[in-house]
Length: 161
Image 1 (cartoon, rainbow, N blue to C red):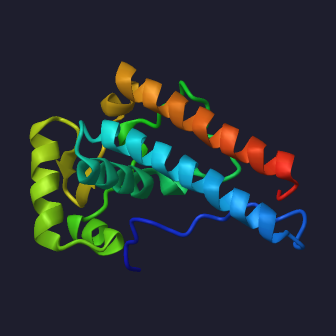
Image 2 (tube, one colour):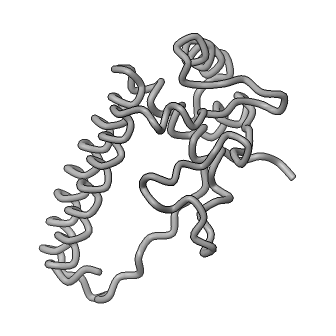
């Protein structure tokens, strides 16, 4: 079975399929703001480099995707999944899923390994639990939560979801 670093997220089903053009325009504006704020957080996660942040995020998602089920494991904000439950992902898969060259991904991964943000293991790479226990990463996680909550609340106020 081939590895996949990223999967398409399941989005909430619209409550009202008869969204007006005005609502669509407002949703487009709100989603642009949410997206740009998210990119700022990704850039911070990458130490100021947006591609480093995207690679860290893609590796993190691949390492922990299997934990997103309904069993409730590691879902609390202070319940960081330990290294032994993270599933490694190859640099090739990360490059393919992000649509960048393998060589570009490899160079960024090497830099992130040197910085201590990624560990190379037998079957690929993982973002270790220590990165998520870091005070700065905890703050970025909280900001991402607030940003996403605000966006969803605005969509609910519009009656879109």
